[in-house]
Image 1 (cartoon, helix red, strand yellow):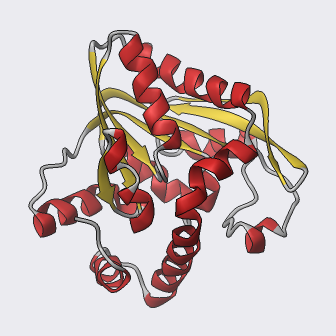
Image 2 (cartoon, one colour):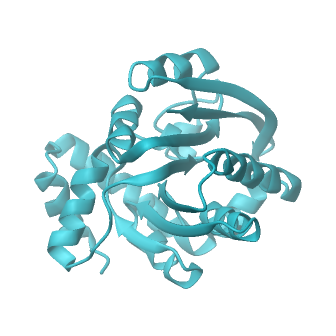
Length: 243
């Protein structure tokens, strides 16, 4: 089951968010609700096909490094599952058995995961484990609380509290698992906070490495040499791997 806005407000309060945070999250949800029907096309507009393929390869490569024949993956802020679906397919082509869960706060995004063989889970990135427990209790689901890999693609700059998200991710990782984050490098285009509802203007390599090491034992962060394009503006991308 996928909750409506009023139910979401109740869940957010149950998760411990104050009124200000609830309103900010609901504002984000309402923005992405309008974007959901065209989300796949929007991603294609941001990224060239060769860039999309490279991002999928980067994530799949990190999963394959675990050396496991079967993996359970959680995609945090999965959106429409644009990248989730492609990573799953790439890994299956390599002979890996893949169990994928798409975690998102926007109900209309979750609806689009069902047709892509991705299990949708409503929740808040800062409270992943608690969100899963609420979903399981409220809807009678059986979503696991631990994953081999947690990924997040082009979403990290939207989170209200990124470091808290990293702690939330760490808490649902199996022993020996890893987190893989691909997102935008720090930039100065303040207008994106209004036009794209960006919470942060990206993060530098140093900021991501420092944030990661406050939460994880290992943090590898590097620029990808790739860009997304928004209204004619090129924004660089990085990959962060935490374990």
